[in-house]
Length: 300
Image (cartoon, rainbow, N blue to C red):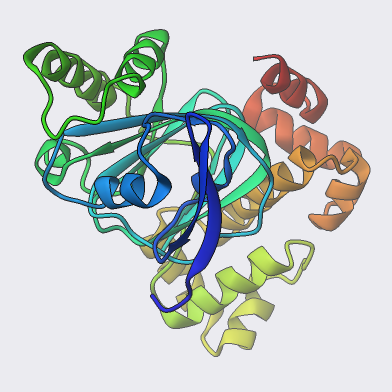
């Protein structure tokens, strides 16, 4: 990509500016615990297919930032949110990555990352050969204390080109835990259609979730029949047009709530007639009100 960003990366107190073509917002952090090498060497290391099968890092203070450029990695990437909120977008879908969830990005998968609120967590880059046993598509995983302990152990390793036998065993256990942790129906996944007319509608709804036009009006706007729109939306996303719009509103609402907007403001911005209607929808998905949900995430 030609859009090169300069980010400040800190590794065990060593800071340097680095022009990165393919970069996650992880590079903003002032506390990336992994390596005494400088930022350029660290970036080159994680973008090599050879070398150690696993490279781990812990991030303590990612600050809110705009969406990153579209980019990809040679290695597969796990992104875990311990506290905070990330939004991850691929060419086929969008995820809101909340506390105690792990995002999986296969090697070579183009994506963007938005840090919606102050975030801490950890990440793992795995070599392509080690990623072969993981899901071939982006997905969301659950997390547990064993994963966390293993990643923190791996983040303390020296920058060796190969893992020793003990480190290899830790890597094997961690990847086994990751394989078992996939969430089949993540409520914050928003599948994107491929048909250009449907994609135009989907992008418009994400940009203006308060737009309450009915299916028939959207079909006319995009140049197809209401019946075709209904059929294509279900075949390409696995859900009806109404279900997809509600899911899109939920993802966008979570972004706004995490940024500190009042429930009433978010309800209005999402096109709900009242705050109570929005809260009822939110409770159906998460089992609790927006306030309690965010409070639980903040204290986690």
